[in-house]
Length: 166
Image (tube, rainbow, N blue to C red; front, side, top):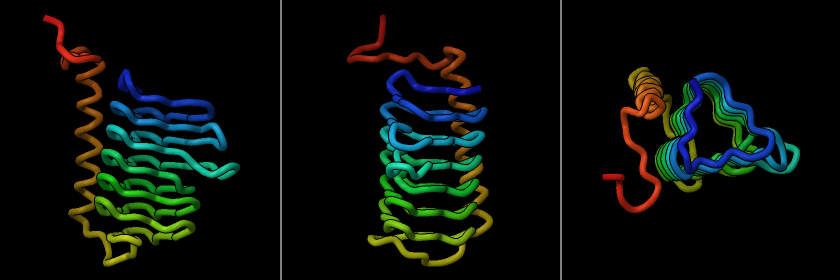
């Protein structure tokens, strides 16, 4: 099941795999190159996914993009967490099962090896990701798929505007 929140914007050449969920205020633009969201990719509120001219941006299956993160790289490997407010700059390539810490800024062209934790400004690899951290990313992803199903079923009311309907 694909879930797109009412205020999410996907434009131009964006491909979504099954189970993708894109939340409120997120913007995904495939206007200068294709953007591919693999199976079960989760893009949270106010995140931005874009890319450079002619450089496709691929988010592999199970990627979690946290609130207000910016993904402007080339590839994010499977089961990677891009933390709240993190920024992946032009041409960056993130291996699978990585954790990009909240607020980290991955410099242009940086290649992050699989199972790495990146922190800081500019971002740098600080240590390997633990099995518990990778499991947590998968748990977050699963919870968002469950939440998306509840929204899609109408179990959670959606109000666009100031007040809920009475």
